[in-house]
Length: 277
Length: 251
Image (tube, rainbow over all chains, first blue to last red; front, side, top):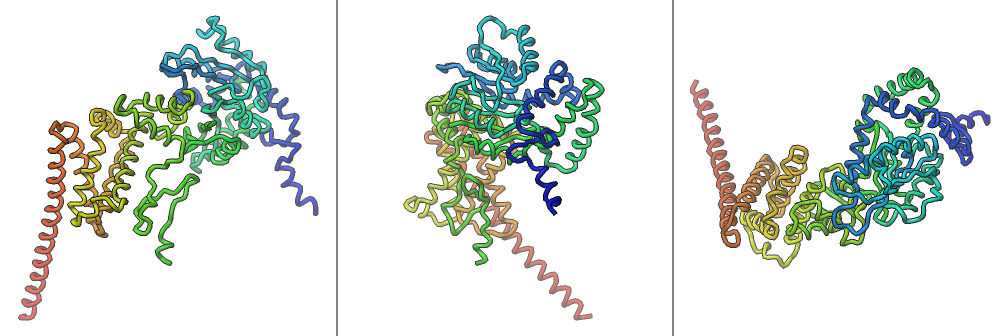
């Protein structure tokens, strides 16, 4: 008879286990395994993103940056401190800086790009060498950091915390949100762009069919790495729904404005906002 | 019992909003949620409208007044309902609608001396237009936000909410097609009066106020005309039936 209970308990992670896509693994292993995934996709990460999302991820990121509309406004007495977590290749970070300069003529705000994976971060640093931000002003710096602890970043030291397509890889998402709350100053913004759940059943069917059958195949053909892309697809499915994730942001202490999130492309991705007051 | 069951109140986590007027709870109509952070920022930003107009700099100034860094501005810009400029306009409209409600709810208000429904309507429209006076020079650009295709739905909704409020406060109890025609004609009166006001240079907007009176009188006349035509039509229809009946009886 204990057999009956077992399938349920082995699917729900307890204190010692967590999800790795659809697999249930030990908590201490997830960091390493996710690390493995991203180390193996680092070099052709953006190419794969383009292929898999048919270029839409660039639109999402652009929209994300425009919605945030962050930057030091003219007449302000203090530049802002940005932190882009899981920022790896730096597209969000450089996009934010570009936006702030274009819109507000902000050339003083600083940017910290943190990623747990040194391989991904190296991609970003490599790219940084050839950008205009590499002007000796030292506004941009790179940090290898675990998003759940951020032990090198002080309390109340950042103004804008962004994380794009990164938070679902955290072993403990709630700990990541709590840390975001810790390091933000009052008035600081937590902004997250992440895959989410499609709310329309018909579109969801097509989306699921596409992501479960085609994506791993593309991963195999283009990057010769089926398992990593299988993981990406499964982890998207495992990530909490919009309302649930909004609840987690509130639980960390953030104030969530009226609507709380914005769905992009029928909810394939969504933008979540939290305010530390 | 039935009444209490009919009152279905949409409860959000931050207060009560309803989409209709309750006779039993006259002060429960919450138009602006004064507790939410965005609405605090926007309400503060309204103070800067006479100076800057409906521009995002009002929001920036409000945030600085509240002692926060510019980063807080993202809490407004990230709202998918529209640009900060539009949100400022939208919030302004709601605050003015709320002010109008407070005027009606106040037992000492001179509004309660007016008995006739149409006089009440024109009194309320004129009061609402008076709220425009301090920002009249900036209003045109703000109104422009409302007719941008992306915003037009919310702009129209807010306009019809206003005419619904006015009809309700004026004592409209119609429950037939007149319910719709009254509100639609009030909306058109309000919009045309507001546009008239933008061009009006007479002292204390006297011409605008006359314009409102004439327009509302027009609705009243139209309503009377409609009723007369309806009565005349009914009379003739009955006569016709009777005529046919009598002809049939004669064989």
